[in-house]
Image (cartoon, rainbow, N blue to C red):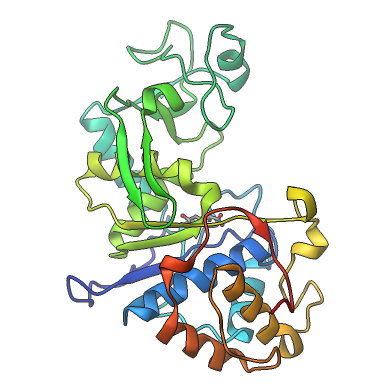
Length: 319
Ligand code: GLU
């Protein structure tokens, strides 16, 4: 498999390197628009770089054409990324090498359990995301006759603690929240946690701004960074976008792309202004302002201290 080039480390040690990492499983949605705006402005506010990475590893969920649709939508909204777009589907050699390092040190091991088997272990407690905590069945070797399926990384009892710049202090003991977790899935692909950690480190990313649906994935990623000897970036998790009454947004209301029928020439400015207000900012523009001007204002004035923590509705045209 080909390994695509990652950005060279052209930045100075302290230059902010942010990134936006959408999964092309559908058109850009309001939550990912908020993540794009937040990550872009927090990188640009500090004179930093903003990299773009397509997280297209989960091939059964990837929808053909959506990666390009997302890129065209971002362009229509006035975003400019630094360097070439990285595609995870072309980086499997890098993930394989990283997994090899874990296996060599005995930090990861093959596991033969199916989801159903893990769920059946009646006493298995459940972690934060409602998934059963892996009971460690294959930790000391595969039971006789069990073929390997996934690969798991060994966790320890020592809690992972980090300071999120928006959500505050997060503390999690991985042995209780998820147990030894999967780094290569039974159906083949490398797990998101492994890929994201390898990519962020190799791209020199030192500031991760994304939706808070990933807040409780972060301790697993920090744990992997420590095993690999990578630096931990600064983390900023943005509030989630909800529908009315806290419900999930419908696909139609949520889609932001040109292909989903949004006229971004007409609506682009209003969408960016709504995203800025959602993030607690007060941009001084009428709804019809050009996208580039709005982003330039944000790059000069975005204030992370104003970003709220709680999930909220995304309101277009609310002043
Ligand atoms: N690909 C993930 C998503 O679209 C984001 C991953 C990340 O920012 O770390 O939800």
